[in-house]
Image 1 (spheres, rainbow, N blue to C red):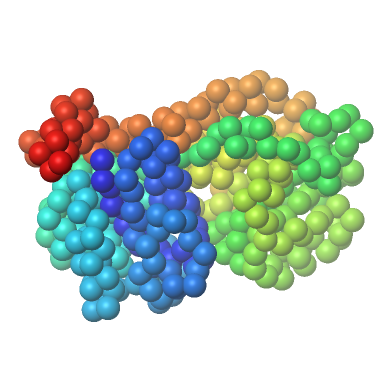
Image 2 (cartoon, rainbow, N blue to C red; image 1 turned 90 degrees about the vertical axis):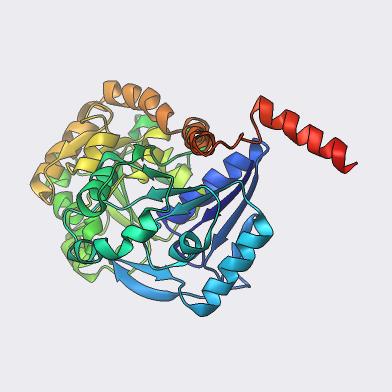
Length: 393
């Protein structure tokens, strides 16, 4: 199957959507499909071989973060050339109503098209205002996918219609078999090691909840004075550093870490804390941490409640409450919660890319079948391809 995938956000500063697109494409390619990804990026940006750069972006504040988008006449021309050169059987656009490459592709394409929605919003005046204007674009979608029940709710509430729920994916075995780093080894790797708790996220994005995490440190140290707190992520965090000034010997700021270091971190620490205040549609990093064997302690927002199986694959605490976070942390490091970790180890299998990408392929095939098109990778499609080859010869 020839598959075109459009990513709206820049690969110059990759985030969750970019990683999702990259990993979906690489999985489909490993199964023999032809995949091309169009994404904003500078020409000199190091990219996977299947990613076609579409040029520089403009930074736009969005959903408590900053999105780097590509839109305009030049971008439209690049989309046209990519669509023509790709001759795709199906097009898959991520965040199709974001004013970036996806919207341009959706307006120009003439092939069956699937859209994936990643965002979860409680209420967006902008979406409600512009919903009537984007309906013509949305009508061009032959199927919709949402990465979570929360993202599906956002689609229904703000845009109308429904969507298949297919979660974000993780290469579970990559995290499951990662080598621990002795610098970060927690008590689960040796009784002589101190309890070790990690935070990972942009330090200067308030919705990531670093302030909540920092507010829980003192209460944990009163019960377990040797506990270590590892804080990974880019950005400044003056307020959090001030809150942690009295715990300098127990707190280490790691700065930005690579993907390999992230896997090693989750394979080493006892607990990973996800203290986000909201604005999350899924929580892929929770799945990564669970796959690595860390006990996840997460704020009780709908997306995290779903990913942790309502607290059976991780522990939940009241959103924005440092005291309740401290309670959950003390419980997690007190007995190690072996039952939670054991359940998490099997729970994460549903998020493995081997499972997720097959579900996406099922949507592609259903869309093609609804159009009366024989999927090229079906038995009938392979026969047709062979016959075309014989005629061409």
